[in-house]
Image (cartoon, rainbow, N blue to C red; front, side):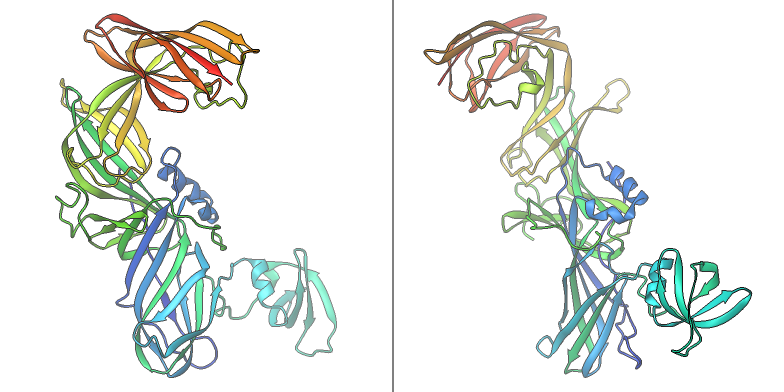
Amino acid sequence: MILRSLLLFSVLCSSALGQAPAPQANPAGSEFALTVYSTADPVTFDPQEIARQLLQNPYNRNALPGYGVVREMRKIELVAGENTMKFTDVATGIDPTTVSFESLTAPESTSVLEQNYEYDLVNFDALLKKFINRQITITRNGRTFQATLLSSDSASIIYREGKEEEGPVQVMARDPNAIQLPDTRGLNTKPTLVWKISADRAGAHDARVTYQTDGLTWRSDYNVVVNSDDTKADIGAWVTLLNQSGASYPNAKLKLVAGDVQRVAPPQPVYAGARGGRGGQGGGAAAGFVETPFFEYHLYTLGRPTSLGNNSTKQIELFPQRSDVPVTKTYVYYGVPAQFRRYISSTPNQQGNLGVESNKKVDIYLLTKNSTANGMGMPLPAGRIRVYKQDSADRNLEFIGEDSIQHTPKDEQVMIKLGSAFDIVGERVQSSFNVNVAQQWITESFEIKVRNHKSEPVNVIIKENLYRWANWEITKNSDPYEKQDFRTIHIPVTVPADGEKVVTYLVRYSW
């Protein structure tokens, strides 16, 4: 559960475009800030696997489930009048339509006249296209001479020898070893932001550059260690960050946004307050994350700078460990076959053998409430939960299960599925099925058995889906049930030690 490094923005200002020397930005003293958003599904998102795939195909960074907003503040030198500034080494995942430049020193008298994003891919074909109608050097038949490049395709080039416009046009096979290009220092071989800036005030300016970039995301990872009798647990949380944006971000101020923030379309280029409960206690707010509500989302602000390298993952503690959080271990028997657990019939289904197969496994769950009274109470971002328990023989922690959670507000229940019980089994049998088409009803009954081979009694929730039709009624039942939604009921039972519990019910569908 521990990974390494991600995030932020490094902009390098270089000399101005054109013939005359131009003002340059001073790269020293820059201040960086980054806000990272995640669209990752914690069930399927594996940061290590994504990082491996992106190292093999770095141009697919726009497939990463998340993005970031990058900000840099740095001092630049401007002259009075028009300035042309180049900012290089920006993230290759940048969305140029989101870029903004602002002088914080003289915002009223400094304006951006033009803004460009330039990135020249360095390969032979791209370079030749840059030199159409320019002078190149050709070596052919043992002779080296100057020529004007007129055209180029994948097989040949067309040129005119010498500088005279009246010279003969010739064609030769395109051979990189026979073609020499002049000075290529004007090419932007790194992603480059170029501004034409009008300034009334000459001298030093504090400038801020902001843009969105792909290739950034994050996920929460939770560690849970349960005690010997499965009644309490220690819970810790970490943030796993992934940076494949094409830039490194030193000493960054970091914020994370938890929530489903809508974006209309993917980007165009390649790709303070206390926590609820005890959330603001322990670990020092200046060092760790502080959670605050923000609009309809939640913001997690790191209280110290962090350096985030490109092509890396990093983990940072989300909140200090919570100790002795009350938990409850429970069992759930979901006898309905997996393919019918989400099934909803568009018409009353009169097929008698529908869903009569029986799943025998009884699942194990760990339950807790994300409340202040339980020592929690902070909004929990979506992520993976891994659960451990100490082996009393050697006092080593052993892994006992893993699950995921979606964004969970305070005071909501957290259910962690750990696996299936070894010593508890279930059986679900359809005991009757009747259809009366004329009177428009179906009746169906089930007998459900749960057998416990443990030496102590266990509490089991029998979960049933009523999937034949939306209008249903339980007309007979051996045990009380709890309606969960329009098609699901829970039947809580206690199964005696080394014994069996039998549950029956009859459901009537009508239309």
